[in-house]
Length: 240
Ligand code: ADP
Ligand code: MG
Image 1: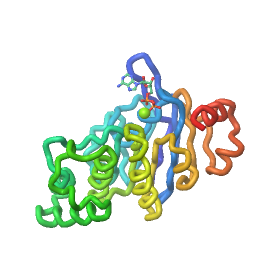
Image 2: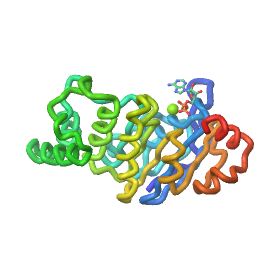
Image 3: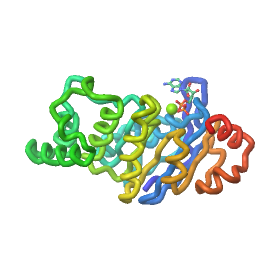
Image 4: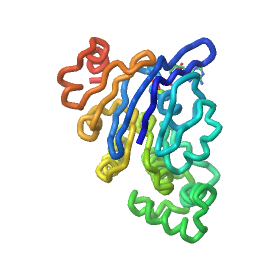
């Protein structure tokens, strides 16, 4: 589902990805962790065509993404992304946030889009919020709307970039529960998170990034019990 090879990314003179490669099978659930500034967001943004890159290749959900991202629109819908800061349209109701891309990108007729959106909101237990605006919702509800919006496009891959980091502690669980639910349904997922309980229970593979490279990757059991690198151990100590 994803083959990224030797990704190189610089911001001006600062090189932030030093040749990162990752292959993800369909249905695989990857947790990506590592210190702040290690390049996690940059990496997932490169996978989604939100960042141009200076080297390497990206194949995702059946698309070859060009280095300048000129063909990024082909990805729309097949790759969903959820950000730390929700990124909902503030001037649109919850329902319209969900139907906009379906209608514009998927060309779903208005009525059908609304039906699908309402079904998705029901699944997220947000039916009664359909006519609300994002600012009227709690952070956890907003993030569940953002997830619902991405899912309405029926993506093949979902990328999550620290989806619970901006939430008050009591709202983290409701979002992680939704994501755990998704992980049981065969969706290919890459999740950047420091929620190690989630990583332990959901990930097929945990990837540890440090200073623009993948330093270590392992199944959760190995990762938590026998990390091989000193920097991984230090990281686990700090967040543990
Ligand atoms: P992480 O998500 O692991 O915290 P990021 O991918 O956000 O790391 O950042 C990796 C490095 O790239 C950091 O040193 C950060 O300061 C730098 N960086 C990220 N985005 C930009 C940008 N738009 N312009 C310049 N530097 C950036
Ligand atoms: Mg980040």
